[in-house]
Length: 314
Image (cartoon, rainbow, N blue to C red; front, side, top):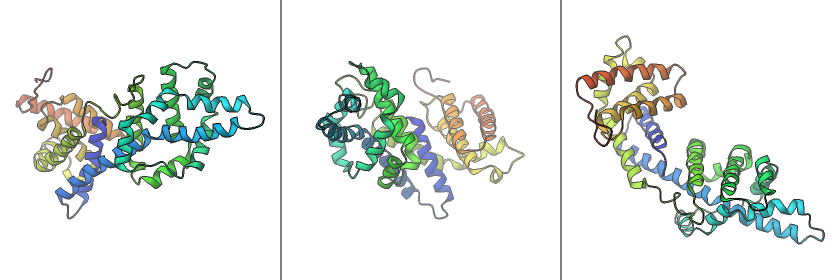
């Protein structure tokens, strides 16, 4: 359900914690790793349930406006536009989503003030103003509106973010990655098929867990091997002098290159260079790239890189 980079970052976080732990227990850290993914998944489900919860709030506000002695069309129209959005309605009526929400006990409650602030921001959003003027918005229009709604909630509403932080302690760590997965899911939604492409992704939770566990365990089990490979290409540096983040990212890349036969070498190197941009220094990208390139060239000469699968045979 989440992309591989998300999973790699989760493993990176846990490996970093593991190597910093003076009394590290691999089993406990492995459990912590899987639990962190479950927590991120709960936020994802919770956020998918947001449009339905917000639609309920909108319905009440719409009733208030329509029951006024002199109802104002300019005020009512935006409420109607959101309330009639086909994607919002699909998510609200999704039995699969409802079952996930119930299973994880994820309820949008005590949100009136939060939703009022979100609406004040969203009703003046230029993209939504244009959307609300359409008499017959297309499904593509509905998608763009919902995408914009999530971005306004997350990027512009302090009250919304505070509310989520109160619910999920991991919101700060997982916000960007969960939001990316969320927007990708909205983009994949099909008309009248809310459940397809959202909660039934081709990559199952079991596959995600397996990948993370294997990467975590193999990095630890082969640490001496990876340390030596890096040390041989950094003769002017003692391993202890290389930043822990840089060393860890190189070891994870080497783990995939040597221990994961179905992942292309270029993919592994590029992925960890991208992660380095997020977690290391500006100079680390070039340093890591140079070292990994030298190592993988030597490994090829020694026929130690064995890739299998279509288009992966080295």
